[in-house]
Image 1 (cartoon, rainbow, N blue to C red):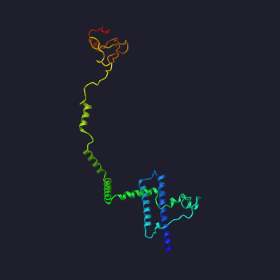
Image 2: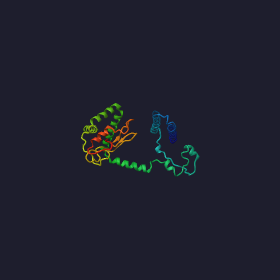
Image 3: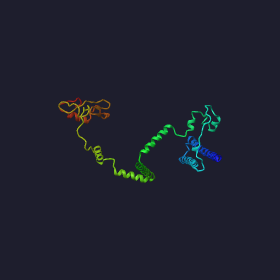
Image 4: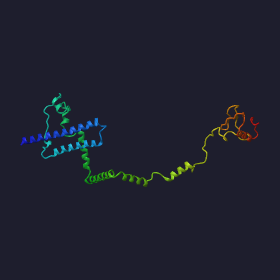
Length: 270
């Protein structure tokens, strides 16, 4: 009886080692593609690799849950020899991952429980879960299921339906005030509602009608006439150049300004 159980245990361990080796080879191949063939790697290929790994892990779970497989939880592993020296056989067996079987690494590799910090967090979660009553837990489950169902419906709906829903939302809730928009357009285009008063501040010198007035008449500014070149007047801009054969001729616009000045004589008014 004992020999039969030992043979079943050895066969189960060999089968488990073979399945794990398949998972390891699939992981190596996938990691190699990610590191060296990422430029040619497509999303369907990535999904195929994930599907392969998922299928292999499911096969291992089925193997462990099989009735013919002995329970590995009842088996105890006891380290017979611990040494700080390098063990070549162990390094070859573990593909150079565990070269030494010492007191430092044995607790990590032979651990049957999670780390103390993880175990403490699990205890806290278990206590918080025990505080929630069955009714409250059922309500939370129903709310979560409803949210997930709504999210799946939105993801499964065609894009046109989502566009129509967003358009309906925009039409029902306008994001602007038409009265404010019309008032702004009227103010910019026609000056509607703008104040007509001049803003306070000093008046810039040199503009016509804004300088100091001469006594007894309108403003008269100095005019300079060149003998053979272009004329320039202080009336706010350049004067057209003289034509040939008409030296020293005063333009008609300047003559009009000179005649309109009352009680003043200009040297060019001859």
